[in-house]
Amino acid sequence: MPFRLRTLAALVALLGPASPPNAAETITGTYDVAGTVHVSVSPFPAHDYPGELTATLSRTSAPGSFSLRLEARGYACTLPIRAGTDGLLQFPDGASCRLDVAQPEARGHLDAQLRTARARVVDARLEMALEFHVTGSMQLKIPSKTIRVLGAEVQTPATWAPSAPLRGTVAASGRGSRQQPSGR
Image (cartoon, rainbow, N blue to C red; front, side):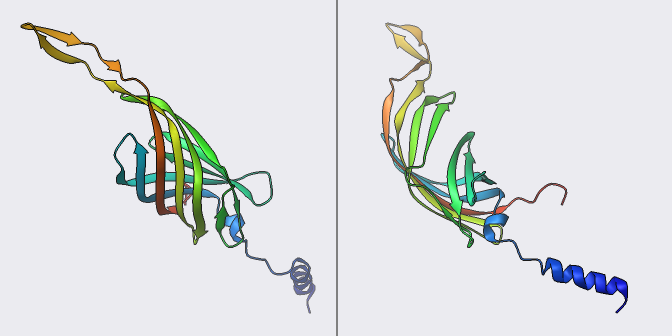
């Protein structure tokens, strides 16, 4: 056997065959997720609507640990998770998100505690179903209004309604593909 061929054979034997990466090593990335959201938070009526969010899975320093950042409509929540070799994502009990709402027509604070969660990554697709228990308070803006008083028009100023307590659930389910890194 020529020297080069023996050297190559020795290197292959020494290094062994390349093992495929496990699912926990291949799930990181950003996913565009579409699905449905059911909001049942009093004092507002329950409502279902289509939802879209960006989910980013990032590795943390602990083995098998990741963070899952969920972003939608200018708000974000990051949850710690563990990933199994089969692509199943495991959420810790009591995971929660705090959101401060600051919009032109609404302001307040919400605490969302994760009640149930199922998620997995299969073939570069993220599938998940999450349900949060929501508490907090919200103020809605009352617009300026022109009213007629004793024949004269009076302009009332815009103001904020008193803070109203919120309590209920937000459930979301959806799936989406991992974004391709730019340059591919």
